[in-house]
Image (cartoon, rainbow, N blue to C red; front, side, top):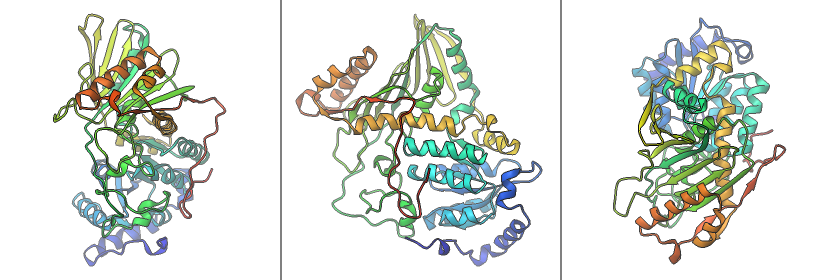
Length: 476
């Protein structure tokens, strides 16, 4: 394991004066324990961004442009990405200190809060570590890698009195807020079903014949963090970790957690469902991915269940288009007694009556990053559009769906159809079979799906932690 004492990046001569000035200012600012008591509203919020590829770049750009926010630290285990974002930060007027090891950043006392855009297996651990050091945190979705981790993060947030937000940005958008309120008002009668859609093209990630080298300037030990020690077994090091269980949660917990959150919000449930069943498979290619690219998840809430559909294959063989359901490919459909509400973007949608006539529209976005800063300044988690508890519950629905699938067994199409006794699940399974047939996958001729185990969750159900590597343990 890399020595954390040697992982702080030394500034170049070009950066030295800016770094020295930042360090001098840091010495005059409150300690972590003082920040835990309060954050004075007249001071600039000092922010550290952890995980800089992809969404992390959005964090840098979005938070750096907010008034009275200073980006004082950047952290990534990939030195090339760290240097790239450092240059971008300078163009935004920031001179952050650079770290490869997040533990050194957290102990440096130069930030009041962190934002997290690392691979999923790091999310909850970083949130807990931040809380323990008197720091607030904004954590990208999914806020956890499994149910137990989410529970520990929520407990840490409460125990240490910190502000912890989840990057489920639709919760901040007035268009989405209006749509959920309209559904819950009964304008179209009682809600009968919330349907989540993640029809998003996911081609094969290829198949390697042996261990692959990590990127040259990436500290792979730090990248693995709490995950089990293992070689790289995928062609593309970055992003394709989403489809391997030790690091990601498939598209159900990647893109899909946004839509799962809206479903749970719409049905008004702040607990886990008593029953969960998943059906699906990784079909159409043989690669190093482990997560399903075709999946149904049924969550047995009463009186309105959630039904989630994942499709990573196109609408037919050779096509670049994706299927749509009532005009949406990535979105949510609320089925009510007298019509439907379709949310086909993060902040807009429409309502159709029983005759298919549009009767209402919803639109309007907002700044989810600014919502976090507002809550931190006020020291009030109630101001968050999506706090750690909301993030945990919605991510947990995805984890339960994946757990059902992983604990299941391969089954024939007939056996799977027989198990899908719920009428709504049965209808979705029928459309899944048609979709696969359009991609040349005939279930009746030897391409069985995995029929998940029916999971039952009671109020006293105890979830267990995975094994953590020394130095990266998340403790209850």
